[in-house]
Length: 342
Ligand code: DP6
Image 1 (spheres, helix red, strand yellow):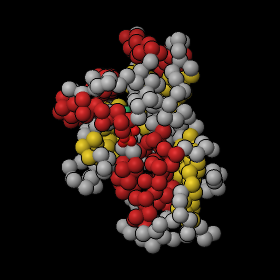
Image 2 (tube, helix red, strand yellow; image 1 turned 135 degrees about the horizontal axis):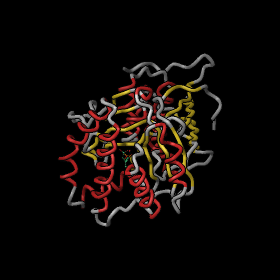
Image 3 (cartoon, rainbow, N blue to C red; image 1 turned 90 degrees about the horizontal axis):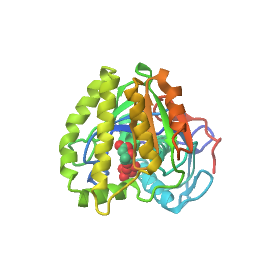
Image 4 (cartoon, protein in one colour; image 1 turned 60 degrees about the vertical axis):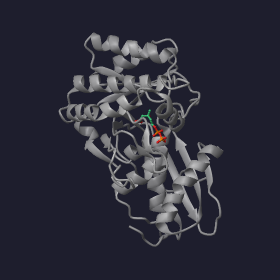
């Protein structure tokens, strides 16, 4: 819905929001439309709680450009993506004002920890509020998707499915909640195996994969079945079934990407050691499984009672620098303004 931009009580177009990263259990990899950022496949994720992005957005009438600070620093490539994302909101509000944007993460960025998911979900949420746009969560999810696909899912909390969608304009490629975090409060240990930014970003990795991997069509053709299996496992809270399908989807996505030319290898040695460690724990009867995104960090998802043992086992793997621990959390939401201004 289009509305006149409306200032807050202090006469400013200013708001702040928090969103958390999500981790896909059935992976998104590949686009059917790069311009609208429409996915080649649907995906299912969990939204985390103790990792976050907090973003403050202030539109300044008359200002020509955006000024963007990420973790207190300016980054030209990221600033371009922020401007492209804010352009979508400016279009909706029919304004051409520049914005001051300050964003902070409490976790390493651009290293496969889904900073773009929480980052763009928080940006869309805060930007829409700042402009007084009254957007439903589904509309915010569609806009966040255009900025970074996985951000569509971080608008929501808990277990979330992002639909492939059928419409050419992408308005049905939207995320929706499947199950609340509290309904099945699994925990996640994140093994950090490198703090360096990844060499090939997801968008470029997906493009290369679609153009050169011989497994691309098999990946797309088998995704519906995986989504259906994961959806049923989540609704039945069947841990073993979710473990099987999640590891399968993760390894299948990486096999697909490894078969690109040149092959995409997001793992390091410690990532692989962590996979073996998680499988050994499961063999011993511990309810835990792994997943890995486009980076070297390993996420181990487990039942709450297993978290300490899982963390201790991962800490013990040579090459693991740190192990973070989080539960499942809520979707994007408003924060008090001011704490994070540029
Ligand atoms: C491996 O959402 O970062 O984490 O849409 O190009 O911004 P863009 O990609 P992005 O890709 C995430 C890929 C993934 C799997 C997933 O989150 O589903």
